[in-house]
View: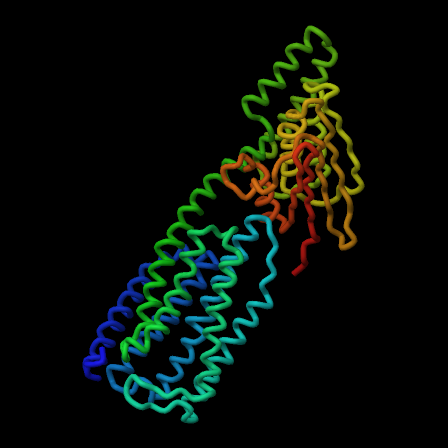
Length: 433
């Protein structure tokens, strides 16, 4: 590198940056427009747009030989400060928020967002100011002496890079190791480029690293997101059908009909009553198949009572049911609470040697919202299993997702082995716009 002439370095930079510009332009124009409906994709696209504009302008400035002297070039570099570092940080923040919300965790990132934007704006202004007041002196085409103002402004990029790394490491469990490594490609590549700059002797490394980061994130993250979205949509349809039809699964229908069959010999009156309850239950659940909009909890409670009445016939004294309904004038996605009750009976009470109790409690909150608690004193389970997709708790996760999507509601689940499980749904009043 030491023996390369300035003309050779300039030619290499023009070639490399021209290739980078071409790659980003191809990526921009090939980016599917339907993906822009997703906020994370819009931020990613905006980052590509700003980076493409920056690299193209920088390439042109090198070709005409005024890369750091032209005011327009200086402004372009300052905009890159926001576009390449701050927008990346916003992208990471949204990914973390979105993944946590999907898992039922609440993450407040508004303050970090404002600080990120503030650092980007202040850093770019200091960078521009340092260029125009001669705080940066050009020694040659690719060697600069940095002034104090420029260095202070440039620290913003390191702060944003370090913060993004810390956030990714902090949330690596919820993101997953592969996702964390993919999203960490930008800070790792940028830091590598900065450390290698003294050895490169004027050859531009940052922008090629930015293009490489785009390719990694796009191919490994956004393509996978698209596949996951298709899977979620397919599963969502199945979940809605499952939730809408309650426990109308083959084994449930078999259990209910078998119970009624034996009651016909032992207690015809109970059999007749069970048939009436079951027919009403079927009518209501089939009605729920036609809609997925929120319903009054009083309707949901009626379904729960019908379901538990049928299960009480099947389990007898092994199943106790308690209601403590203080408030029912609120909306909820149909058959979500019932799904929790079914889970309590099937996985909590039925597995307990002596059976147990299912208790349903509702309260009106001081802010006008509502809280629902579904408790069982059955066998319980390890709640850490909820975060593992293959753990068999898809029902609870799908209920949490429906509540969050339809109502913005929160659901927490606590459980202890051999002590029971409690699910708490908190519904806040909808904001009026």
